[in-house]
Amino acid sequence: MSEFTRRSFLVTGIAAGAVAAVPGAAHADPGAEGAGAESAASLASRGLRTDPFTLGVASGDPDAEGFVIWTRLAQRPLAEDGMGGMPALPFPVQWQIYADEGGRRVVRRGTALARPDWGHSVHVEVGGLSADRDYWYRFRVGPYLSPIGRARTAPHPLSFGSPLAMAFVSCAQYEHGYFTAYRRLAEDHPDLVLHLGDYQYEYTRDTYTIPGGNIRDHEGPETETLANYRQRHAQYKTDPDLQAAHAAAPWLVVWDDHELDNNWADEIPEKPEVPQPNFLARREAAFRAYYENMPLRRTSVPRGVDMQLYRRIRWGALATFHMLDTRQYRDDQGCGDGYSACPEASDPARSITGEQQERWLIDGFRRSRARWDVIGQQVFFAQRDNNAGPLKVTSQDAWDGYVASRRRITQGWVDAGVHNPVVLTGDVHAHWASDLKLDYDDPTGRTVGSELVATSISTTGDGKDSDPATHPYLKINPHLKFYNNQRGYVLTRIEPGALTADFRVVPKVTEAGAEAYTRATFVVEDRVPGVQQTYLRPLDPSLARRAEPSDAERIQEVVDAETRRP
Image (tube, rainbow, N blue to C red; front, side, top):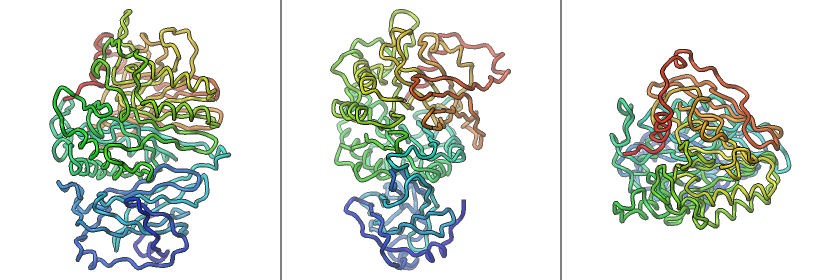
């Protein structure tokens, strides 16, 4: 990727566009004429003395005419007050969009205001671009230049466009491992990345640990205040592998629980029996910091303790992405948030999405004309019973704890005649692939969809490989087709005739720099619901010869990986 110089940025011409009322946002102003940059001396006199682009750049939420570009100014990212070492003053940030990687053809330019009350973050909604093509972007404050990022517009609404290379990820615990999987993802050059939650973790150091000890530490206390959350987001954003993944392609982001508090539900914290009288203030702070640090449009600007995060992104006629929020509106877990045989899980009044979001989703199914309807969300969708006997023991934090909610939504896409429903999931720190059913208790029943689950980027440490065919979960639940407990991501190729998913893994995250490889490949064919395995990398012979744990021990390993917390 070409390196731009300050001179090349200046020569192409920066123009000051009108700054919108939304914090840190601006529209493109292609007709504006040159505006001079503030000098280093002038910036220093106002307290900005070093490079403020320490957190990198990002883009997100693309459509056929543009996307959001993001950055956040921070001279000292880990400052305890969460302000990144920035003075309590606004700073104009100039930006440019380029049609070529070398930065010779400027197609949009403008200025956005980085304000202290929004953490000096900048969200620019760029429009007026051509559909289905790559663009590049960069920011500048005085003599300081940001890294360059690549973005891509969606195809025209009536066009399938080019095949879509889409990756999805989840669960990056900074302390548990290096973010090597983010680096390998960037090297795969996706057109779009979905982050399905647990972008950062709330714990203070030496609280959530892996065997052998964490390899690096969180700064600051457990996140409860706006300053805490800003500092924690900044620490994650300083990671060069994460910065590379953000710069590689536009992202669609949704949160899960750790962006606020483990296993929270609506206005209820993880442990309601432990008084947390500041929880709503904590929720407001977490939401505000999340917006400040993500490439989101103005429709997601938080309002107090509420934030509109569920939304729909259309990728031409090829795919519609229904991005869900399964935390903010859910009923509390019925029998705690672990595995249990819970009668309340079947209560038809209980919902994981809330009534309004459920209606929005089902209405989206009815209106969709896309070849692929992709549901990007947080927690396991298919049934996972871990008991071989008649008792059904399932995770109450997942859709298994909200059975009627799952049934209504599944029936919704069936009744709407959705061509190809595919659910994408994170949260559980392992790769899975599954057929989706209306009735999971009838293994011969009709398959009505597909679920692909991404393992963690780093959470729980290295993990280990095994033969997926021997895993007891797959024996108990015949609709489950694949399991792997290594770190990594899923890389997909979406075309009109098929969706191909490569389950990518890295053998270690406790050491930096591991190479990635494809552990298995699954295909979903157009109008043929369910996952079909087309490739499985042979298990290392040394692993095949080792003594396997008992089924009960392997089931407990899965439960522990998902639920073990401080």
